[in-house]
Image (cartoon, rainbow, N blue to C red; front, side, top):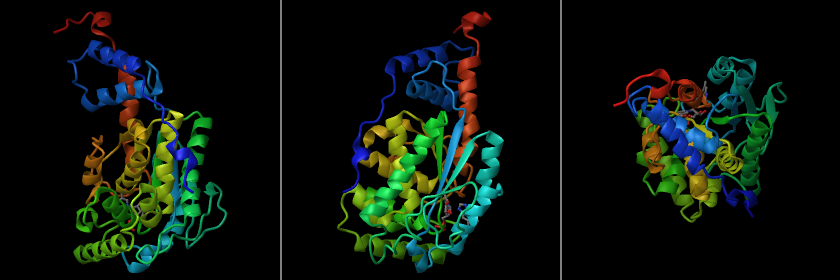
Length: 348
Ligand SMILES: O=C(O)c1ccc[n+]([C@@H]2O[C@H](COP(=O)([O-])O)[C@@H](O)[C@H]2O)c1
Ligand SMILES: Cc1cc2nc[nH]c2cc1C
């Protein structure tokens, strides 16, 4: 039976600290509201962190990698071997997220949950192998119950490590060839949408490729029409890295750690988390709207207003890492600006 800890209550934001933070924003030397989403973020972080001085440093980034059986249906522009190959690139510092983590001074944890082209032991990569790949969900459930549990637990494990390391915000990323197909299928199942609404180019399919992908997703949805609970939908249509992120979002909210959600795949994992344990929604900040077709629809289902819309579609936590400095600046402004009274500036 899955899963025990997932339904435990999430922490709640502190209403009185939130009111105080909102009052402070109104007292700072700027027209009220003029820092827009940065004001909203600072107030939210203050309430979540139960602190009148919100902060997002140090940041923790975990990248979860896993392969997908559905890759054999020809749904990605890239070969499956890339998932395993990128693990080495993450560890060697050459991947986008490696560069970003270094620039931000963030801890980067890389987790191999199971790759067909397994690079074996690599310094800087945590091995938490569940299987070489999920099963092809056109034919059978992507995961067994035990595999789903292991993936959810892997996410919670990373949250615990982040908290032990003193992190003040968690960024979760994913890497998995064909995982936009899994995320689209899961998103369609969760939202009751037809495949075309959430099928996109992923790593770079052309229009014919996207149409084929939508047919594959339709087949998967038909195969698993009997999966009616969120956990069953996640088990049948998800992936190891997607389920790990779902585990992250629930565990972080239970542990009182705010998270910055990345792109399309991460947002579908967040939707699953919110459907499993609605209390985790408060802890999710959304970094960007991906270029991936369907991301805006999933963000809307979560009533999420992301900070950025830059045409990013890389994944691996990169969009969240790119948005992170905005949160850092939001906190600096909140904590460091003078009030009208302190600065001797006239109010409206
Ligand atoms: O995060 C996104 O919005 C995003 C959009 C498109 C592609 N990706 C990345 O590309 C890979 C999946 O693409 P695909 O075409 O193989 O399904 C996977 O490793 C993701 O991290 C990520
Ligand atoms: C090279 C490459 C890097 C990635 N990072 C996340 N998804 C990816 C997909 C590909 C193909």
